[in-house]
Image (cartoon, rainbow, N blue to C red; front, side, top):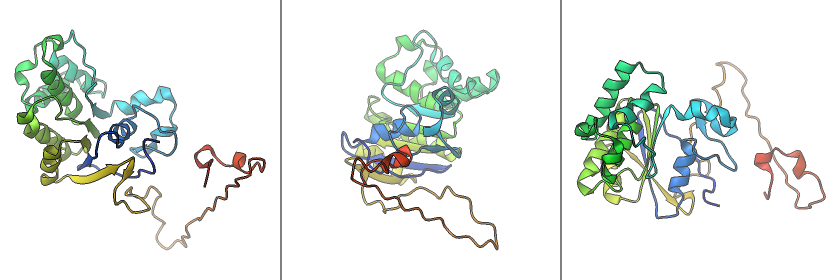
Amino acid sequence: MVLDTVTLGVARSELIVIEGAAASGKSTLLELASGVRMPDRGAVWFAGRNTAGLQRASLPFVRRNIGYYSSESLLLLEDSALANVMLALAVRGEAPAQAEQSARDALALVKASDLENRKVASLSSGQKRLVALARAVAGPPPLVVADEPAAGVGDEARDIVACALCAARDAGAAVLAATTDAVLADLLVRRGGRRIHLEQGRIAGAPAMGLVPALTPSPTPGENFQPRIITLKIDDDEDSGQDEALPPATRGPA
């Protein structure tokens, strides 16, 4: 098990910094949040919809509203840096002129304006990462997910990365960033980020009910509202048949 009972929420104009040692589950958590991977159990809510329950054909419509950055962020090598960033905006429906301006603004944000007309194939690995980061924050989209955003771009680029993520947050995006770089994490926290620490697939110090906002609507004023309590009893006897009566997400040992 890579992640075990991880529950958290990130709101608009909020930046969450996820720290943890190698193999603590950070990258898997971000893949789940961005729709790159589906959970074996549980739910992933985005814009009021559980993406874990969507058909595979519907996932591209979700992913186009998420700026996802990782070390393996794929760029179109034969296109320019500007065209790569514009593509992320075009799939969200921006008009060509607006997409071009927003892409230029994103490249300027990561100090890569001089790269906009160069083919990605001619760029260094660090330059490619900056272009991929610009693509993730361009707009910005409703959700920005960044996995080790400062890796491979040099120590001097930490401030550039922090400024780009904070600018996306300040523009209204929900930002989820994971890093093993303590210096970058401290920098983001000083700029208003909320720190969460993962240990062996669990959030360290999280309350039993997790950190996610309530997903059920508030009761109508004056309505006699009573919460519905459900008790599940799972029999260890394999022949009891009770386990088959439960929905898939609740099957298994108690």
